[in-house]
Amino acid sequence: MQTVRLDELHVDEVGGVEGASGYLTIDLAALSRNYQALAAKAAPGRAAAVVKADAYGLGAERVAKTVYENGCRHFFVAQFVEAARLRPALPQDAHVFVLNGLQPGNEDICAYENIIPVINSIEQWKNWARTARKLGRRLPAAVQFDTGMSRLGLPPEERRLLAEEIALGSDVEILFLMSHLASADDDESIQNWEQLEELRKIAFEFPGHELSFANSGGLFLGKPYRIGLARPGIALYGGAPSALPSPMDAVVRLDVAVVQTRTVPAGTKIGYGGVHVASRETRLATIAAGYADGLPRSLSDRGAVYFDGVRLPIVGRVSMDSITIDISALPEGAIRLGSLVEVIGPNRTLEDVAREAGTISYEILTGLGHRYHRQYR
Ligand SMILES: *Cc1c(COP(=O)(O)O)cnc(C)c1O
Image 1 (cartoon, helix red, strand yellow):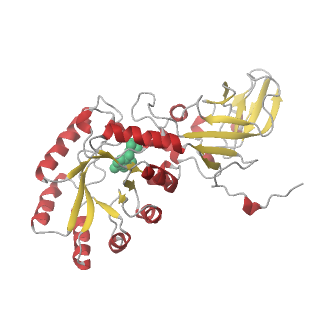
Image 2 (tube, rainbow, N blue to C red; image 1 turned 60 degrees about the horizontal axis):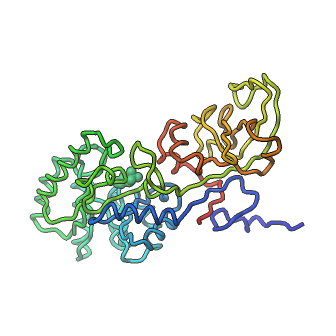
Image 3 (tube, helix red, strand yellow; image 1 turned 30 degrees about the horizontal axis):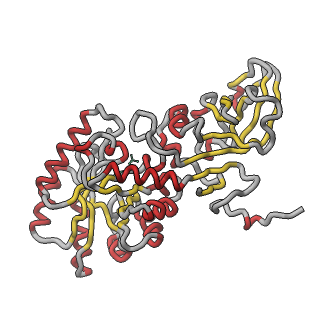
């Protein structure tokens, strides 16, 4: 018998590892098709890629390199540390933006590492302009405006101050005037139109700059929203940009291993709290993923996994490391120790899981965790 050395079990490598508790498969060809489809939708503008939170949990470096090969040159992360990790992985002609802005103390390193801040306040603008003066060169930035979300970006009352700063002469080079939609997944929301109107005013106040507005949902709101540089995130990863079923190709598949099976008589309690009681003789399987692997506890006694296209309901509470499923619908012996069940895949989409869990696809994706064997196809 051959022994496997622990250091040979790389959890992040391409290819299969036998005996993993779960397999998270990321389809880079589907990602490429999604990027191309979104870039075509953004035309004549361009499409960036939002790769914050490790590309929604799928691996920022792999994702960014893949979309770069498809022509993407603009990348958005949320935090400086994410940019610092991603920047060396991409060619110099890639632009890496930090959505959360410019934190005091990061100015010099942003300048040296060619990381582009999204300037969210007049204070950040001044700090960046001071750094440019000190270094004696022009420094690039995107400037974000709050058009009605009250989260990030210059509030309306700071616009006049910005205009004064620019009029005085500044070494900050504005690459994009940017804003973000609060209700882009709802094409009936009046807020979309209000924000677009506000952005038009801003473009009029600060003429001559390219705009960046639409996220995934924005790209599907119609032509007026497809301006300048679009910033899709979730749609790249196969998630639905609106309330309709996702028009994008699925990128993620999750298969989880069965670690035990058993048959219990009617009246048996199943899982923590004994909240589920078998109403008849039931065949059960326990699978090796739980809320610590991003399958929320709100899936307790809700939702299902699939095997050979057969629906297998989740029974009892979701544990930290396991979930129990009812496999009575399958022929005896169909599922055994080590069998893999489909948790996310063709039968049960990311959106299905999110809906059953009472959340959104973004939260499911970013929560999937690091105990699965990741394989890129
Ligand atoms: C996260 C984010 C995006 C991407 O949004 P999706 O809905 O995932 O397409 C775009 N812009 C900003 C400012 C963001 O924070």
